[in-house]
Image (tube, rainbow, N blue to C red; front, side, top):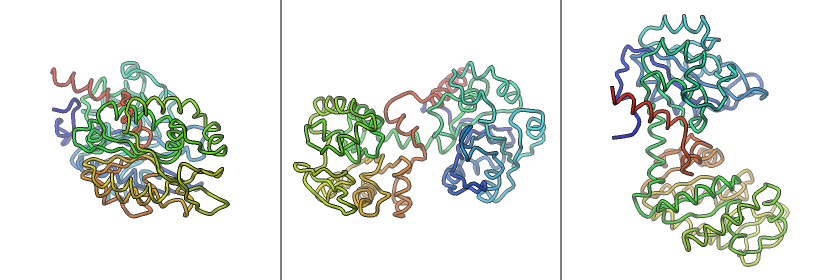
Length: 404
């Protein structure tokens, strides 16, 4: 039995259901939504609520940003995707919102205003403290259940994520449940070989993940991107002054010592590149890690691509987070492309991270992955083993519900 409820555990037909979704998306200056993949990720949950009275809560950007906007364009986009009218209400918990909620019929859906228009939304408080807010006090009595389908924001203890779990029967939506189950395949390392490929530029996050998954029994971690540069430095490799200075400029020199500790504690488990590709005046130059010239490291080399691809193809579970190189430059997307293709041949393949997902879409590989996470920073938090407030709140709500 799962330690949180799913939608199958609650009677939702003809009930008034509050659903937290994450449809925060890039927008142009005219308010046009440029990418609707987050909308599409929630469709299965929303379609499963066809016979309920559904109210959606979501945010768009944050105060001070150019794309901090109302949710009106989002309601239009949802209407197109669901092929039904999704009513936008320019209110969160005032009388306009409450009257619209009361008047809902089964099969109808409305989207409330940007939750971040309410200042208390973004305060990091406990679920119990958030439950005392005006938003929860005004809205909760109108609902029969709360569904959290917003895995991507559940690493934050924000009002709309955790506040309603204290006072309403609360469950994970279909997307939330899928994210947890998929990431758990990697995190629990119950099938072997279990391989992680960690890259990109967020070194501290990837090193936390490496520490956690190796401690939990992962068979190997393939080091990619800037993560590999830090591990190479930890292994005593001369990466060149340009790359050393870049690591320093990003504030990651302290991670070299942590990487060194991981290498010592888990000998042979962190697999480093044999060769790399540097950017020599716009050209791709491949060299052994034994003789790295003073140019920016921008990708893994061909020998490493072959070795890492073989490891990923033979994995029962493969988890990828972060690119192998600078994917914005055509000459340096090779490592990322080949690693992604290889991972799709693993028994179960999971990918996450903004640049990784973008590369998957560019290469048309989305359908070949077992699971592509929409979680972003939340995926990293989960794989790091840090508690996720949104999920912990669902677990607490389930424990209370099951005692009834």
